[in-house]
Length: 281
Image 1 (cartoon, helix red, strand yellow):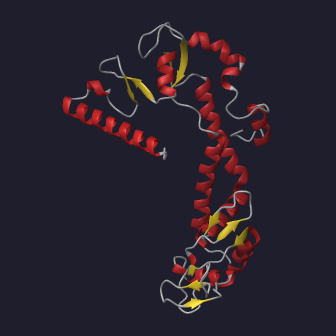
Image 2 (image 1 turned 180 degrees about the horizontal axis):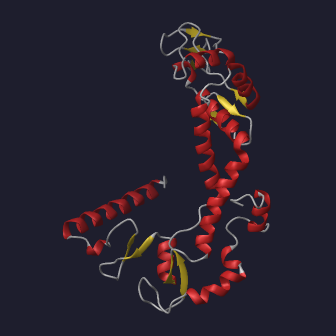
Image 3 (image 1 turned 90 degrees about the horizontal axis):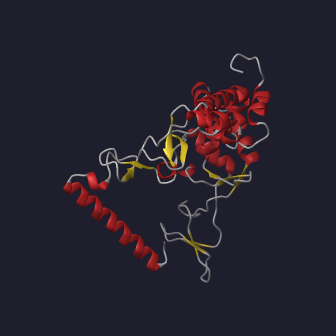
């Protein structure tokens, strides 16, 4: 595929075979046949011999993750080479893809979000100038876009008052809308290249995974601690497990650091218990 000998969609269908991403590795005949040949006679972490399994120290990143990453890269390149957007085209994009939820303004001083009163009249009261009124005003979409084109960081255009019309209903300000428009342009321009790059990176990850590269033989306990708890056997005492980000377990720390670590753990337990008692956990 990298040399153009096979089309992207055909490569995808042959690789995934109609199955969801992440369902293939240990279900393949090839993997099942190579597994017993790879396994050693004891755990490479604790030297145990009970219930041995293949422990991958790294896992393939999802295709969707690579797709987002490559899309961001192409979007940045597109923005760098095409920083300006036609105002009329931008206005059309905003109106077509977003619902506008205006920010209410005081008609006297133009301050944002005057206080709305339920029982008292007039209905609104401005916290800044204390003006009371029944009808708030707001800027039109065209007014906001004009301000945005003069100054993208202007106070008037920072509010997330544009709600996307898709199923996500994301709230955006005009800067965000501009980015998503430029991102869409980049995707439309280089969609196949983006998908191809992302798929090749994901494919390379999967090849490494299925070839048992960066994998060891581990017992069930060590594999569970590594995968689920993100812990590994302490290299110093070879008895206790530690977080993979730490050099040793707590028991192997110098006395002052061990005491501080235990106090921190105890504080965390007490804090959690207090939250649980108060019903806010």
